[in-house]
Every structure is written in structure tokens, then in C-alpha cells.
Length: 175
Image 1 (cartoon, rainbow, N blue to C red):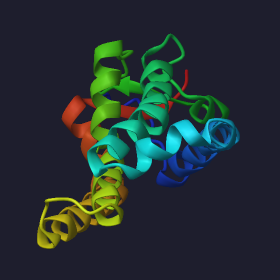
Image 2 (cartoon, rainbow, N blue to C red):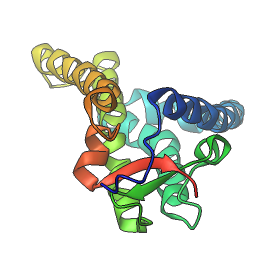
Image 3 (cartoon, rainbow, N blue to C red):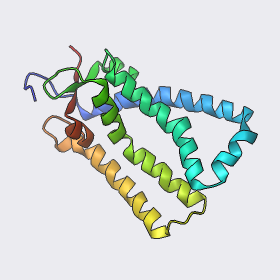
Image 4 (tube, helix red, strand yellow):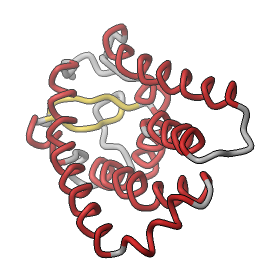
């Protein structure tokens, strides 16, 4: 990594995420409003089987949030709204801008625990053919991944998360 780039603190990253969560919550509130109007059409999508519920949840919630992060961080600004407000950007390890492909990959890795949690919960709520030990093992994996994702910036020299290390990205202050 370029030693001239100042590392962004964990607290700054968390604050940027909380700001982004305002947008995510706004979107979820909009979805809740729409769901009241389309309730008869939506109920079967979430009650028939866990796979259908998972796919529907992915399309309505995870995919839009994933694309928000991937598109914003792969754009010219290289930052979501929260990151822009905090004055930080996603960059390559030498400070170079990242491309859209790297942004898509980074966001996919970032959201693996979230989507795995959704998969697990749907299989807990709606009976499925998967054995309980598998579902609970996956849930434990979710907690393990979240813990690793949360503490990895604390032990990394460049405050990188595991997914940043894999993709070759860092969070740095905007020039």
C-alpha cells in the first residue's frame, strides 16, 4: 500500500455505514408501504417455500442494497452517500480508483453474511428439507463471518476488512 495514504479509522467507516443505513431504511420504509398495497400478491412469495422467499427477499432487499454500494463505489465518486459525507472513498491499495468490476466483487463479498443470514432464517421460519444442524451451522457461520468482518480492520495494518484484502482495496480519505 502507498504509505502516503492515511488510513481511515474504524469509527469513521462505521459512521459512514450508519449514514448509508439512513438510505437503506428509507428504501425499506418504501417497501413496507408498497407491501401494504400488494399484500395479496406478496404473501404467497414469502409463505410457499423457503427458496421462493429467499429469492423474493433477495430481489426486493439484498439486490437493491448491493447495487447501491457497488454502483456508488464503482462510480466516479468511488463512494456511497455515507462515505462522501465522511470524506472517504474506496480505492485500490496504491490509491488508484477501482473499477466497476472490483466494486461488484467487493460488494458481493461484503454481503455474503447478510444473504447467508437471510437464507438461514427463511429455512428456520418455513419448514425445509435441510436438517436443523445444517441450518444452525450456517447461522453460526454468519456470526463468525460478521465477527471477522468487524474485527479485521482492527488487526490489519491498513485497516482493511477481509473483503478489502481479497479484492485489493482500501478505504482512504478523499483527496
